[in-house]
Length: 124
Image 1 (cartoon, rainbow, N blue to C red):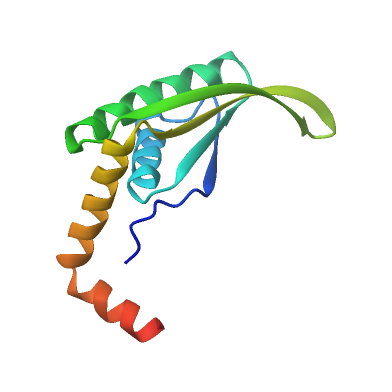
Image 2 (spheres, rainbow, N blue to C red):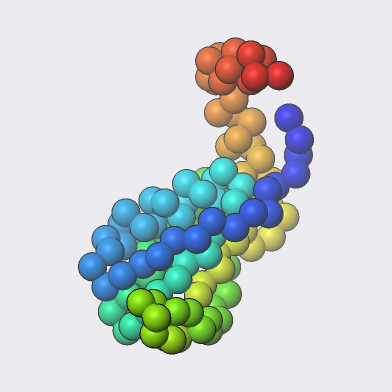
């Protein structure tokens, strides 16, 4: 197994009706898998839900030694042929200690799951 953390970015689109706890679980899962997460929100309600989800995900990740940062930006997007401005949040591990914690989680989950070893052996 490689000690490198993936740098691919998965995009979550959040609406004002999104459940912050559900989005937080998705964020935490992707961060634990080694992916950076991009969250896209259009409108004040959606941005509110996205920020709450990021805060909740921090609560899920901090106890296992993973600290995250959030980098906001604007993005011009097209929805139904109409130009809109979205807010994008990139969520990623904060430092090398967090990356080490991710690797430790990934390593312990593969060591404790003999089926994952068998599955990887059959793919190779």
